[in-house]
Amino acid sequence: MNNRQPPRPLPPRITRSQPQRPEATQGRKPEIQVRATGPILPPSNIQGNALMVVIAIMAFLACLTLGAVSMVRATAASWQSQISREITIQIKPDDAIDMNKALARARELALTFVGTKSGEIVDEAATARLLEPWLGSGLDINDLPVPRLVIITIDENNPPDFAAMRDLLSTQIPQAFLDDHRTWVDRLVSMARTTVLIGSGVLVLVFTAMVLTVIFATRGALSGNRHIIEVLHFVGAESLFVAKEFQKHFLKISLKGSAAGSLLAASVFALAGFWQDQRLATPQADQASALFGRFEIGFTGYMGIFATMIVIALLTTVTARLTVMRAIYEIDQIRSDPSRTDGLPQD
Image 1 (spheres, rainbow, N blue to C red):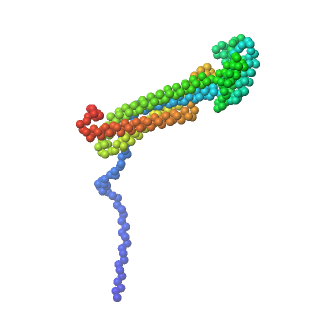
Image 2 (cartoon, one colour):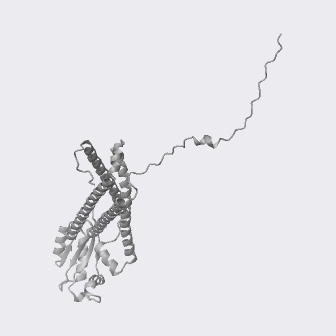
Image 3 (cartoon, rainbow, N blue to C red):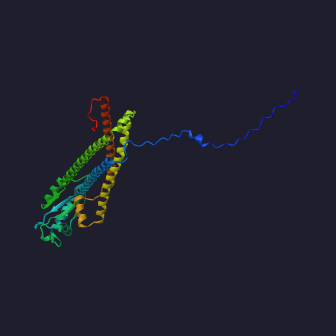
């Protein structure tokens, strides 16, 4: 019988790690670091800054025109609404009539028609205040052949029969004359429409000039960076990729320029409204209000300015993209036909 025991396993040898020698690390290759890609066009150059200034100026003019048109339309609508709510009965002075009785009688006759709400007789003091800017203060209305007025408030949605009212007044009071302000309303409507047409024409001119400016600026940027586009084409870059890079470049420029011009235009209207509020009941503010109305464009006007800013930015971007695509197409045509020399930069 074999009583021989198997050998015991040896305990593992504990070895101390030795530091690597410098000679062993010299042969190892350094890690490759990927360099961040930069834009095809530089973020800021002379052409980009000039284009930004031009877009800012055009955005300012466009927003200023839009705000002015909105302000004039609001003022004309306010005048039209005020005139449409009232009619005036004028009674000429005559020795054969009692003016106070004639005024009261005219008011009663007018209120008998359906569509009238109330009537107010303009007294002598109010009539004198109306004539004060032209004839001065301290007037005696009884010494002047000044007609007296009766103001009748009407329902805009259901106006009375003005022809029947005019006939009744002329029959009962020969010195009475009914003025329904139709002539003034028609003139205000014509003025508002003309102003809107002029403003729309100015906006179209501004947008057209901006498109042409962007086209020439984009072509200038392409002519200065044509070698970059040709190299990208040679290495296999797609046309859409190059156009996208130019599109992003001009989008940033157009957003900065249009935002600056729009904010400047909005500030002009805000400062004008603040100046008018601070100088109420002064000759300067009264004359400005009489000519231009309130320098307020409201929330709708400011939203229109913001929309104009977005439209200008998008229009600039689309124009830049189309121009780049056309320029790349011309480069491809020249590469496919080397005999063509048109479009190549002359050294």
